[in-house]
Length: 436
Ligand code: AMP
Image (tube, rainbow, N blue to C red):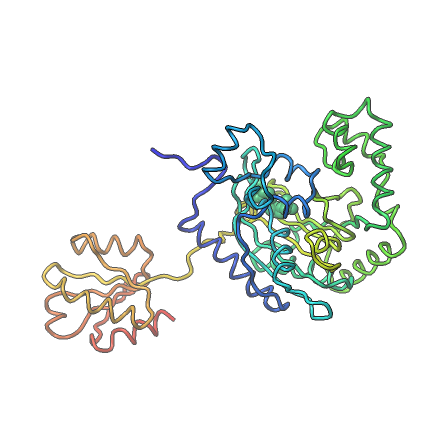
């Protein structure tokens, strides 16, 4: 039997309903804040991710799935190197959504100078070559938001408020959501802080793992995320970014917190929250669910330099992304089934001699907007009733010889088992009303 790729999933049935429900809640929640949907390609030039996410990040260095056309693979194998390839030949499956949306905003001039900000949200699959485990896939799905052209600290707070509302509308118990925030500084103050962390790691080189020593040169702040307990112990004494913010960044951070307080959002400050990607500036945030054991379900932050890195004019921006699969797992720990069926349907059952009458009845019901099922395998009446139960029918229309001759149908409520006779000519309208 053909197998799907490890770390990928098929979405169907309740799981697919959950993914659609999540997008519906996103559309409703983000729409109120003025966001509209954008869809960018799942495949982009590697340069788009290198400029945005940063060459030194794990995502770009180790996890990005590279894509080459068949003809190119042959020539690469023959040459044994990528050298000489043009930028448009170096492609990758998107590991995250932000870089592609920002690339699209630059290319399509979505934030013309002096115009209102672009408020965009997206939903779709992302790809990372990670070791698959619970809540960590190679193809997973994100819903995300990008707000381009907004610099005010109120926008950071609004973004976070909107994210927390989104989680609550999905069904999370508000008390279980743990929001952590931090400020990462900006181009004015982060380089000096980064250098301090680099020196700190090198001063403690004999106690740190090889990965952290490599990080010291490439991306020292990532050492705060190292899972090695010795490194964690050393990093507990490392300089913390909130103590090294410039005046502007400190003021921005203070204002964001004031707005969050005003909105009544509970948060914890985590001075070691650095997030993995290079593009973040100032505010960063992450959300976990207490007791769910799936890691962060979402996170984001401000990225004031990203539009420029993608070739646009200097434009502030911020956003977040949440992970569908982890949200479903976390909701399950709270007894919430995001993919629970809400619809219910009508089942039209018949005796074998009037099977031909079912066709028109089903058609009339569907034309009236009623979700309708009927037998298409020549089953007995008894087994049609069983099937009606199985598909979750709320009502069953029963057609027999006498009913069809008299121009009526028996309408049976599948919960109360009450039955009544209804004129066939009025059936669709009556059923549509009941199902509403
Ligand atoms: P990130 O872009 O890494 O901040 O990811 C944002 C969210 O996407 C995370 O909080 C997770 O919910 C989800 N996510 C990230 N990577 C994966 C993965 N490999 N598998 C499943 N979900 C993921």
